Image (cartoon, rainbow, N blue to C red):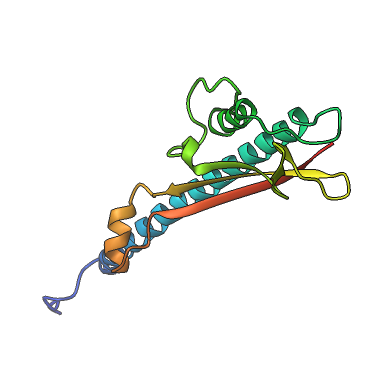
Amino acid sequence: MKNHPLTHKNPGARERGLAIVEFAVSLPFLLLMLVALTELGRAFFTYAVLTKSVEVGARYVAAETLTSVGYADLTATKILAARNLVMYGNIGGQGQRLVEGLDGGHITVACTYGTSSGHCSTNNGVAPVTVTAEVEFTPVMGTALNRLAGQAVFPVKLRASSVMVAL
Protein backbone atom coordinates (compact mmCIF):
# COMPACT_ATOMS: atom_id res chain seq x y z
CA MET A 1 0.00 0.00 0.00
CA LYS A 2 1.36 3.35 -1.04
CA ASN A 3 1.38 6.31 1.42
CA HIS A 4 -0.58 9.38 0.54
CA PRO A 5 1.73 12.40 0.00
CA LEU A 6 0.06 14.47 2.76
CA THR A 7 0.24 11.78 5.41
CA HIS A 8 3.23 11.44 7.66
CA LYS A 9 4.90 8.30 8.81
CA ASN A 10 4.99 9.88 12.28
CA PRO A 11 1.52 11.20 13.28
CA GLY A 12 3.00 13.10 16.30
CA ALA A 13 4.97 15.41 13.98
CA ARG A 14 1.77 17.03 12.73
CA GLU A 15 0.61 17.73 16.30
CA ARG A 16 3.98 19.25 17.20
CA GLY A 17 3.71 21.58 14.22
CA LEU A 18 0.23 22.63 15.35
CA ALA A 19 1.51 23.33 18.87
CA ILE A 20 4.22 25.62 17.47
CA VAL A 21 1.63 27.56 15.46
CA GLU A 22 -0.63 27.93 18.52
CA PHE A 23 2.31 29.13 20.58
CA ALA A 24 3.31 31.67 17.92
CA VAL A 25 -0.24 33.01 17.79
CA SER A 26 -0.60 33.30 21.58
CA LEU A 27 2.92 34.65 22.33
CA PRO A 28 2.16 38.35 21.61
CA PHE A 29 -0.88 38.24 23.90
CA LEU A 30 1.13 36.56 26.66
CA LEU A 31 3.93 39.13 26.35
CA LEU A 32 1.41 41.98 26.48
CA MET A 33 -0.09 40.51 29.65
CA LEU A 34 3.38 40.16 31.19
CA VAL A 35 4.25 43.79 30.42
CA ALA A 36 0.86 45.00 31.70
CA LEU A 37 1.25 43.10 34.99
CA THR A 38 4.78 44.42 35.43
CA GLU A 39 3.65 48.01 34.87
CA LEU A 40 0.70 47.54 37.21
CA GLY A 41 3.11 46.30 39.86
CA ARG A 42 5.34 49.35 39.33
CA ALA A 43 2.31 51.64 39.66
CA PHE A 44 1.22 50.00 42.94
CA PHE A 45 4.78 50.16 44.29
CA THR A 46 5.08 53.86 43.35
CA TYR A 47 1.73 54.63 45.00
CA ALA A 48 2.70 52.71 48.16
CA VAL A 49 6.00 54.61 48.48
CA LEU A 50 4.21 57.92 47.81
CA THR A 51 1.55 57.17 50.43
CA LYS A 52 4.07 56.11 53.06
CA SER A 53 6.29 59.15 52.48
CA VAL A 54 3.28 61.49 52.76
CA GLU A 55 2.25 59.82 56.03
CA VAL A 56 5.78 60.23 57.42
CA GLY A 57 5.81 63.89 56.34
CA ALA A 58 2.45 64.55 57.99
CA ARG A 59 3.59 62.81 61.18
CA TYR A 60 6.72 64.98 61.24
CA VAL A 61 4.72 68.18 60.78
CA ALA A 62 2.21 67.19 63.44
CA ALA A 63 4.95 66.32 65.94
CA GLU A 64 7.29 69.24 65.26
CA THR A 65 4.87 72.15 64.89
CA LEU A 66 2.93 72.03 68.15
CA THR A 67 3.63 75.05 70.32
CA SER A 68 3.33 75.32 74.08
CA VAL A 69 0.07 77.27 73.75
CA GLY A 70 -1.67 74.48 71.79
CA TYR A 71 -1.34 75.81 68.24
CA ALA A 72 0.43 74.15 65.36
CA ASP A 73 2.97 76.67 64.09
CA LEU A 74 3.78 76.01 60.41
CA THR A 75 6.95 77.91 59.62
CA ALA A 76 8.62 77.95 56.21
CA THR A 77 11.51 75.92 57.62
CA LYS A 78 9.21 73.19 58.89
CA ILE A 79 7.30 73.10 55.60
CA LEU A 80 10.58 72.73 53.69
CA ALA A 81 11.70 69.96 56.06
CA ALA A 82 8.39 68.13 55.54
CA ARG A 83 8.70 68.44 51.74
CA ASN A 84 12.25 67.10 51.89
CA LEU A 85 11.07 64.24 54.07
CA VAL A 86 8.39 63.33 51.51
CA MET A 87 10.77 63.64 48.54
CA TYR A 88 14.02 62.22 49.94
CA GLY A 89 13.17 60.44 53.19
CA ASN A 90 15.20 62.91 55.26
CA ILE A 91 14.69 66.51 56.37
CA GLY A 92 17.99 67.65 54.85
CA GLY A 93 16.86 66.96 51.29
CA GLN A 94 19.86 64.81 50.44
CA GLY A 95 20.11 61.61 48.44
CA GLN A 96 17.98 60.06 45.76
CA ARG A 97 14.29 60.88 45.44
CA LEU A 98 11.95 58.22 46.76
CA VAL A 99 9.50 58.63 43.87
CA GLU A 100 10.67 59.42 40.37
CA GLY A 101 9.23 62.70 39.10
CA LEU A 102 8.16 64.04 42.50
CA ASP A 103 9.29 67.58 43.23
CA GLY A 104 8.52 70.20 45.86
CA GLY A 105 6.00 71.95 43.63
CA HIS A 106 3.70 68.93 43.84
CA ILE A 107 3.77 68.66 47.63
CA THR A 108 1.50 70.80 49.79
CA VAL A 109 1.69 71.18 53.55
CA ALA A 110 -1.26 73.05 55.01
CA CYS A 111 -3.40 73.54 58.05
CA THR A 112 -6.68 71.70 57.69
CA TYR A 113 -8.74 74.51 59.22
CA GLY A 114 -6.70 77.38 57.77
CA THR A 115 -4.46 79.80 59.59
CA SER A 116 -4.95 82.73 61.92
CA SER A 117 -2.12 84.94 63.19
CA GLY A 118 0.47 82.60 61.61
CA HIS A 119 -0.80 79.56 63.51
CA CYS A 120 -3.03 76.70 62.41
CA SER A 121 -6.58 77.30 63.51
CA THR A 122 -7.96 74.78 65.93
CA ASN A 123 -11.27 73.02 66.23
CA ASN A 124 -11.97 72.17 69.87
CA GLY A 125 -8.25 72.43 70.65
CA VAL A 126 -7.22 70.12 67.78
CA ALA A 127 -4.99 71.46 64.99
CA PRO A 128 -4.81 68.90 62.16
CA VAL A 129 -2.29 69.40 59.35
CA THR A 130 -2.56 67.93 55.84
CA VAL A 131 0.28 66.83 53.60
CA THR A 132 -0.57 66.03 49.97
CA ALA A 133 1.68 64.89 47.13
CA GLU A 134 0.92 64.25 43.48
CA VAL A 135 3.11 62.66 40.81
CA GLU A 136 2.58 61.52 37.23
CA PHE A 137 3.24 57.83 36.65
CA THR A 138 4.28 56.89 33.14
CA PRO A 139 4.81 53.22 32.34
CA VAL A 140 7.98 52.19 30.54
CA MET A 141 5.81 51.13 27.60
CA GLY A 142 3.49 54.16 27.99
CA THR A 143 3.70 55.51 24.43
CA ALA A 144 3.22 52.06 22.92
CA LEU A 145 0.23 51.40 25.18
CA ASN A 146 -1.25 54.80 24.25
CA ARG A 147 -0.97 53.90 20.56
CA LEU A 148 -2.49 50.49 21.23
CA ALA A 149 -5.41 52.06 23.12
CA GLY A 150 -5.89 54.66 20.39
CA GLN A 151 -5.99 57.51 22.91
CA ALA A 152 -3.84 59.12 25.56
CA VAL A 153 -4.22 56.96 28.67
CA PHE A 154 -0.81 57.66 30.21
CA PRO A 155 0.60 59.33 32.24
CA VAL A 156 -1.66 58.65 35.20
CA LYS A 157 -1.67 61.00 38.21
CA LEU A 158 -1.06 59.33 41.54
CA ARG A 159 -2.18 61.39 44.53
CA ALA A 160 -1.68 60.68 48.22
CA SER A 161 -2.83 62.73 51.18
CA SER A 162 -2.52 62.33 54.93
CA VAL A 163 -3.98 64.27 57.85
CA MET A 164 -2.31 64.16 61.25
CA VAL A 165 -3.31 65.94 64.41
CA ALA A 166 -0.73 68.00 66.28
CA LEU A 167 -0.87 66.68 69.83
